[in-house]
Image 1: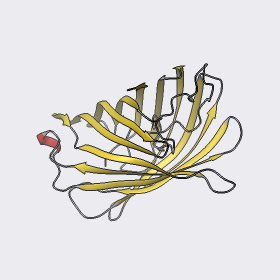
Image 2: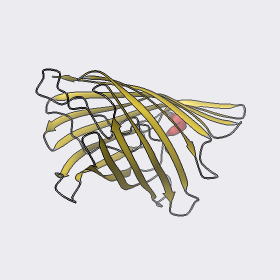
Image 3: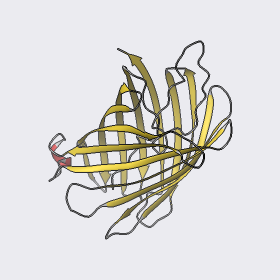
Length: 249
């Protein structure tokens, strides 16, 4: 099961610190992708390091995962995801790059009444652009709809639904997320989240996580998060640290 750490901060401070743009809005540290688009002509880099322990014999380190986003216009961005993995299973150790993902995010609807702010995210997994240990057999898609409601000035409710494929079989894995974010101050925000992966033929993987973000300035953000698994196949626990920034070309 692919563990994605490239996730969304659900509610952001819109203090512009003397600038026209809102503060950086990221798809990490939670699993819920946000519906916001990177500003036009900005590159945004969301970098993370994570540690996941399934049992005494299996551990996985992602160091790093990098989500690169580029804003084309107010409704469309391009995306590139790279991950370097280190897996330890008993005495065996494997490391290398996961297949690269290339994709986009497109805004579909603005928030109005009961209609949430909604975007669509699509990626394609390039199976051969990977280290030998992680090469897949097939090109495979990933997609999700990401939605957000404003609850109050300081709180939001967000959720995703979608599917992904593992590159080896035709059976999809369904994805769901549900999270609420809260802004404590101009610089500090946090979230709690429930999410899961539901394969068509195998047992589901349900998890809970929570985290905080610290905004250094409108273009730079630090995040820390962690969580636990609920299902038999879930990891016992996982932790993540990330740093995101954006620059205009």
